[in-house]
Length: 558
Image 1 (tube, rainbow, N blue to C red):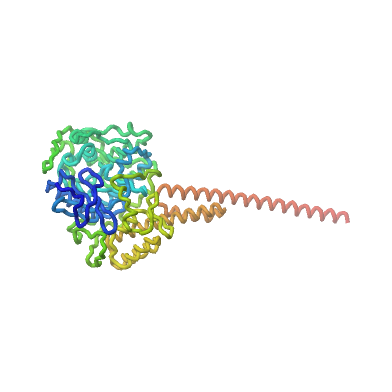
Image 2 (cartoon, helix red, strand yellow):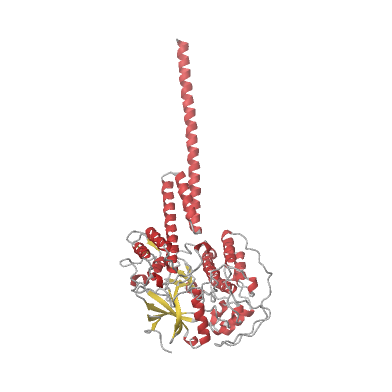
């Protein structure tokens, strides 16, 4: 089969391969603005028309969901020579798998920050009626900003056959047992993949090690992994129970929704007990033979004790984000030298920010960022031409002439979205000059005048988050200045303002500590003032008494 390098897919010239995934290969292509990623099926899977159609349908449905913790997918389709493709953003990051295999050690409490963002991404998908279908450490990206982005959504969602015939080696162990026996992808199967990924993060090894796909798949169906508590030192029993519940063999024993997962993650972070399990523990399913990998529609027989997982359908209240509900051209327009008219571009409905969970970590662990051959060899910020004359700093952030620090994900969103109105175009220019507050205001005006689209909404959401961070930093810095100047009441008020703006445990702890210190200092100063007043009164009384005695003595002498 021909090599895609040097060919054109969806109108973009493919330059070089980036990485090989569980069932796909990622290539770099170039646009007029910046490099993008072109995802294709593995060569041995491209000849399977049934599989290709299912993968294409899954990509098409998932790409309509826009969320900061999801890798943005711009378009999808089918190439006559290379089969299904998906065009998506390139994220400067490294995968969770590479991070662990490189020797990075993360305390279990810090791993909860990764879990919160991962569960938040899954909630956005599930609320839109989409299951991810293939959650494993290789598709969990840790960005240079210490944020989590989930990649690969939808690719295997519509594949209703044993994944043991598609995934290779130890990756099969991250698929739920019902997925290995041919059931459809559901939120419950996504939670299993999340639990297996957390197991890998905490234990430093695959839940079912091995290079033989059949042996790994059989173990995932029949056996329980080595107890996590014996592999991870200092792990709280509640954290072990949390991962075990996610990795239950039976779907009914796992969490019912991402909201429940987030609730127990918050319980873990605050030291509270987990929510009561809905079902009593049950023994693992009876052993069942796993058929050799096949690329046709043959489904491996399901163990009798494991009930079939029902096909996932979107809730009635959730917006349906598929091709039937959203009218737009395919593929979605990408950055180009030409600006199309606003009337020719689609409007994509997605869950509003009010429906998304507020839990988010601003940082995971200092020192985590490192190179990922899949994502970082592109020198994206320096070759994209998005911010001419602005060099990326070592931290992965960009410093604009105005001194404002903007994160790479917002810069990427601005560079990869075609402005569809003059106000949005002005907002992009203001952003590149470092005037973030004015940029967000201009973007909001563009949205209010009816020029709404997914890229604009993402810019507004990301911009507001960065503004909130800046406002927090301004408030906490002013509180520290007032504290150093002895203005403890003002310091308490500004620290309280910072606490109201805080988004992470670190920020909340910093604000609360400063509030407590300022209050203590204010009480200490008040005591000193009271003591000084008492001493002054006593001295004044003694002086007055002395004067009265002196006057009295003089009177007696005279």
